[in-house]
Length: 117
Image (tube, rainbow, N blue to C red; front, side, top):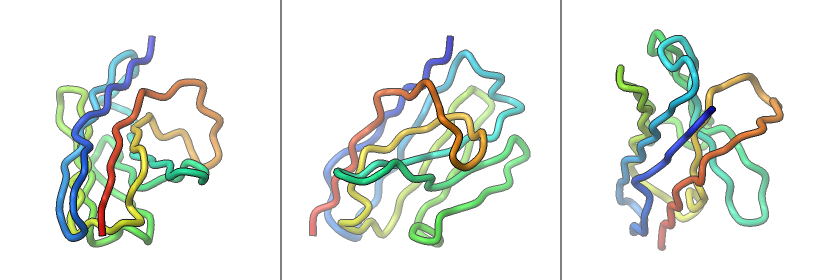
């Protein structure tokens, strides 16, 4: 059974930083590409960043240079978010990356990030 537990969100002023964590179970984490996603109010969920099991990373243009995705060997993936902007306000989720447009049947509860101006 897949379990994804996101944490680390909060309220921060523009220009501030947060570090999100996601602990995954029920997936073969060590060989999985993992992704961070976000969903802002009234918008579709979007992919923010991915990291392969080898550590190769990719970022959405909107966060490139400000966010850093990383992972450890204990089934946890992280998202370091710096220079936060009000438009980064969203609920952030992680999941095993299965390709763009994949229709996931499971998401964790997410963690709310709110950036005030």
